[in-house]
Length: 149
Image (tube, rainbow, N blue to C red):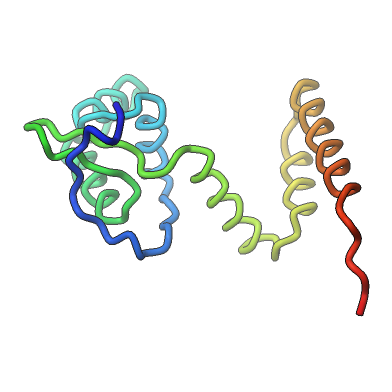
């Protein structure tokens, strides 16, 4: 659904983005996949995944997520519909940036090395990584070098 058709509750846009918890990420994955869902839709998706979670638990979690500006709630109809407040790539970037700073002190190479060492990558994934590295090298080669003052 287009967010322009939503009657949204007023939220404070001045607050910094909040990182979702693991359980909030599970809900966001469902919302990203389906664009907008009722609490019942999310609850049913959990049941289809074999997760036994109470409807009231999902409802409360989504209410909290609304307060944290992680989701938007359409209150224009009886069955409220929820949408993720930020696209999946933006949330993933925020999570990676947070991990990079907290766990690796901003050292991106260490993060990448740990990610590659701790799991077996497919040839396709390695080819994509090589392509991205080549792309970054070409982009940095075209930039003027900073002089040491």
